[in-house]
Image (cartoon, rainbow, N blue to C red):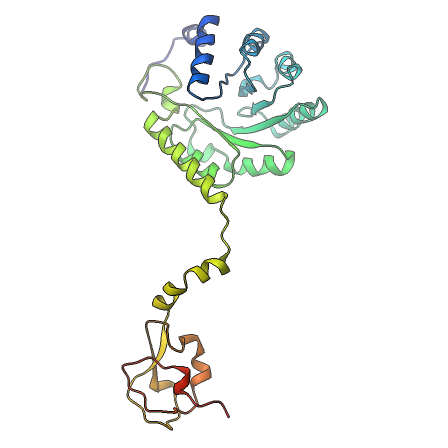
Length: 281
């Protein structure tokens, strides 16, 4: 278990960056091809981050009542990504109404503000509830310290994933235990790309079956005789078995064969073909 600061104030002081450090972080992110985002917790922070051309605002779960802060963000005209870890449905709807009335683009994160979050409290159901109710991008902000919620959210069509990352889950501070490590993050990114590939390539079952015509022949079964039979024999159900491959009369056609006569002698070691069978009377 990671160590903890004595007070929340100690935590915030320890995590505080100077303007110069923020500039370095912003520049480093851009050099690495990353979008630089940070949660702003004050109007002053909004002004600083706006100066750094941050393209969107991440609203922390504890800021749902911070109208002055939200107002400062909305005035920039940039999209807002709103975490709802402590909010009721009514409070979320009120925020959405405000964003819509002020024509501010936004997305919602389902979130549960427990560190770490137990799996039974992740709330995957809320993702689809938000999508249906608010018609906006919806994601999961996960604090479970595992990959499972993010993977499940992506699999059900989540638009965004926010997750905490740490070098070591035993590091000092409250976030480490609620974070994944970088190896896990890499696996999550691979999964994201794999899910995207699957989502962008819908399958037509008819076309796919046609492409598998050779395999269909190998894996399906044909009708065959249990014993050799002479021409003129009336075929009965107990004379017939099924064998692979499916290159003869396929096994689903058995009702079309029973009661009909053989045109020619047929051994038990080959599949029945339609040319073996007399036409129906």
